Amino acid sequence: MNRRNFFSNLFGRRRGESIFFGIQVAVNAFGDEGLRAKVHRIIDESADDETPEEKRRFYKRLAAILVENQHFFEYGYWDVITEADAAEAEFENWVDEIEASIATEEEEMGERVNEMYRYSSSKYYVVITLCFLFENDRSLDRFFEVVDSIPEEEYWKQSTFGRLFAAINSFDFEFCLGDAAFIMPGNEEDGISMEDLMGKSVEYLRALS
Image (tube, rainbow, N blue to C red; front, side, top):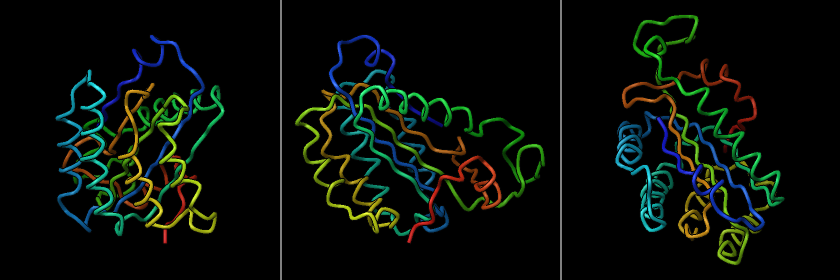
C-alpha cells in the first residue's frame, strides 16, 4: 500500500538544489499487533493532492507511531544525498523499486504458501518506507543538525531510526518536491516472514541493535 505525491511538484516547478532522504524499517509487527492496521489507516486516509499543512499532519501522525514502536525495529536502512541530480535519481529509484516489490497480488497473501511468491506463511514483519525530495535550503537546518549529530557507530541503532523519524516533524513541506510512503505487504492482515524478507532483494537492510 502506498501514498505518493511527487509528479506535479517534481516536474511542474522550478527547482533549486535538492536533497534526498529515505528511510526503511522492517518492524516486528507482533510487538504491536495493531501497528500494521494503524499505518494502513493513516495512509488510506491521506488525500491524493495535499496542501503542505496536510502533508505535515500526515507525516507527524506516521512518525509518532513509528517512534513509539522503535524498539520493534529489527532491520533498517537510511540515506541522505545532497547532490541534486543524484538526489532526484535516488528518489525516483526508491519509488520505482518499492512499488515494483509491494505484495498486492492475491496469490501472495493468505495462509497457504504458493512457493512462486512466498517461502513461508508466517507474518511477523511489515516493511515501512518513507522517502522525500526537498529543496535544499535553510528550512532543513534542524534536520541536518540531527543527521550531523549521529556518530557513524550509531547509524544502525533502533534509537537512531527513532530520532530520524522524529526529525521528519521539522520538515517544511512548502519546500517539498516529492514524497512517498509505503507499507509492505499492501493490506492490513498480511505480513512478511523472515525468509521472505531476506528473499525480496533487500540485502542492503542492516540488523539494528
